Image 1 (cartoon, rainbow, N blue to C red):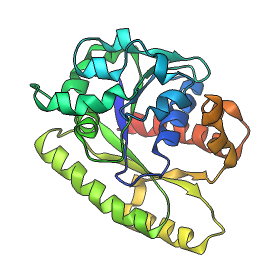
Image 2: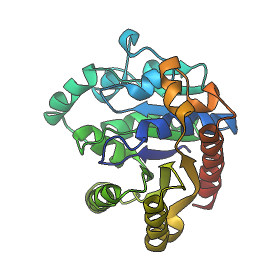
Image 3: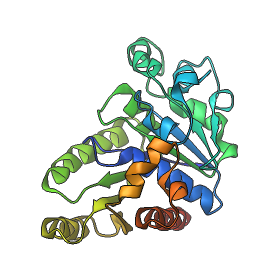
Amino acid sequence: MAKIFCVANQKGGVGKTTTAVNLAAGLAQVGQRVLLVDLDPQGNATMGSGIDKRTLALSIYEVLLESASVAEARARSEHGRYDVLGANRELSGAEVELVELERRERRLKSALQAADADYDFVLIDCPPSLSLLTLNGLVSAHGVIVPMQCEYFALEGLSDLVNTIKQVHANLNPDLQIIGLLRVMFDPRITLQQQVSEQLRQHFGDKVFDSVIPRNVRLAEAPSYGQPGVVFDPNAKGALAYVDFAREMVERVRRM
């Protein structure tokens, strides 16, 4: 049975897509079968996996409208060695079309259930806003991975996300929980980041992953080459940190 996780944060620019793509590649490297679902109309996770969003014959759009299955719409990330349910601009139209449809917030869940036996992990890259697309992700998932920078405004955004998760848990998905907080773009030389990191540890305890992703130029360069950072430069500090994080995720799932 596949474990399904949303990579989500209502604050933009916190490394959600970088985390989703590199965790997918990291999990593949440690022997897991992985599907990456791109729920963001910008299609960055699709492009970052080496798949051209402009040439997709089928995408997550068709899956949500139930005109294609996951098996029909998925593509292979050759560099990352995982499958991708890609997204492009068509997906922004799905928001409007879904409003009128039955089971509008459960479409993705139904589609993923049909592909359950094919994967060990399903990672869902959510858009930064709380939209019907994000809701589909949260309703499908067993848990949420929250990438966040150790900055003051990140704490503000985190409280909003926690409230959202509580509402979805109460009304639509009783399985949903925060799996863990991942500290990203971390620079230990900055005192404020150390202080916020410590606050997270005190408040959330073991919900904070041991893995920490450092600020790393090679991770930022990788998408322009259509490769996950862990493949683009396997020896970079950021790449090694994401592979460590993948191992930690496997271990955490075993204990769930």
